[in-house]
Length: 159
Image (cartoon, rainbow, N blue to C red; front, side):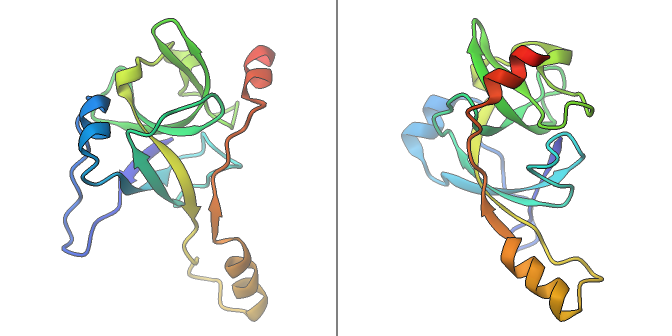
């Protein structure tokens, strides 16, 4: 699942943190940032168009949803679930097994390419949602925490 950065109030896209996590943890100038999801690889957890609150440089544990640089295309940010730590980094999986684009395609992701942990997702109101029922459903589920899935290792063994 690719990510797009959400523009700040000035209309400019905020600068991504450097790859060095030690620098980010030490400075922590802007520990939180926003991103927008594009693509289906994390369905049902995340949908196309969802907005994310990301903690840059956060400690990652198995089951966490993380933002990382694609190992072969490092200008591309992706969001995946950190399934388990392996020699050489993290094995990451999408929640949608049919979408691909995870460690089953490109292997273990080096630790320095994992940029941050996703804490919350926000689903913007869709254009056609005007009825009171649709607005109530949206208000109830628009903002939710993105929880760690401790069953990620079971999904890993199933693949």
